[in-house]
Structures are given as C-alpha cells and as structure tokens.
Length: 94
Image (cartoon, rainbow, N blue to C red; front, side, top):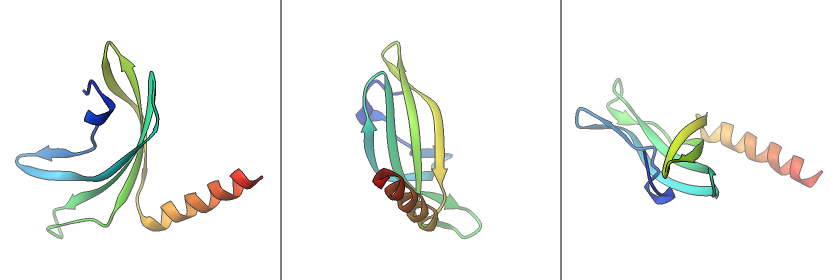
C-alpha cells in the first residue's frame, strides 16, 4: 500500500521478473477517492517479450493514511482505447 499518490504503481515483480512494467501514469482525480490511469506492458512468457501497451484505470480509497485499491478496469489494446475515447468524446459533446 502507498501513503502518497506518487507512490501508487501498477508495477509487479515476481521471482526477479517484472511481470507488469509501468510505462506512465496520470492522476485523474485526487482526494479520499483517487483515480489513476496507467499505461503498462505485461510480460508474456510464451513469447519471452512484453506485450503491446495496455491501459488500466484504477480507483483507490485513502484509509488510515494508506491508499487501498478498490476497483480497476483494464483496457487490453490500443484499438479498445481508441473506441473508448471516441465514445466518450461523442457523449461529452451531447
């Protein structure tokens, strides 16, 4: 768990291998409930390489001075991200 927003990460390592590599992050909202979007790659053992970029939107709740993960939504490809962007842009215009 993290004490500050800057410490929140999606990076995950197991047995010396970085299975989830965080490439970037952006804070969408701050406060008792914080929303962060991450850009990351996931290690694919069969290919012995990292995946194409993926994205994850995560919500954290600050409890007792620590941020705790509450929910997440993973966007598995750039194509899916582009569809989501187009839908949101259309809705915002309405």
